[in-house]
Length: 257
Image 1 (tube, rainbow, N blue to C red):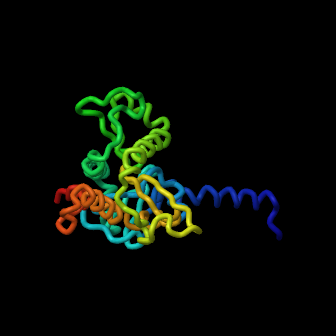
Image 2: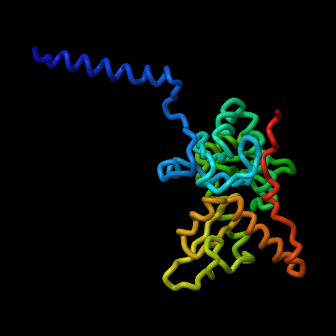
Image 3: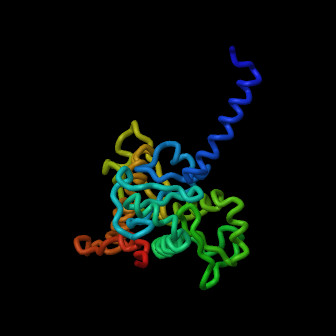
């Protein structure tokens, strides 16, 4: 006997209902970020703001390897990087504590470069102790706590305003004439159009926009190079003994045992 059309419809409906149930049995959560080595195009498209810019694992603080050897996870669009699958899993168990450590490290790293003395949201003068929050791995300073909700309504627009302010503050005295990606002279090749962008509050200049991938791969390493160049420019007689860039020390505090 051939199955009737009605029987086929009931069978399809039963199978559709069984799939979510099976996922729940395995512990899968719809939309949950899955740790993966490196960042593929799909993940990068979902990322909000900057790549993870600290040199240490977001969980344990241990030095990170290049992007394709690190575990990358998106937390509500925010990119985080881990030294191992174990740390990525451990992060889920104490997420609030881990994020607080990462935020504190990013504030410490980016605060000296902050380009504005007014709130990017309201335009009000920043108090001696402004409200400091991290959005998309970027430090944002506000005049009062009530502005956080306004910031979150359109964080991308406000961070873009920060980028413009950082570019204006750093462009004229930018200390590198070479591309941070390839080492080639910026503007030296007429077939390449120079580009610039801001990461972790630092202006980055490259020989072409394609070189941004070098920053994405090891942002902490590139940031350290830029910081070192700025330090050497301020102390030209001491280039050989210029201390390591501040970013190399801005790691999340190690987790409690």
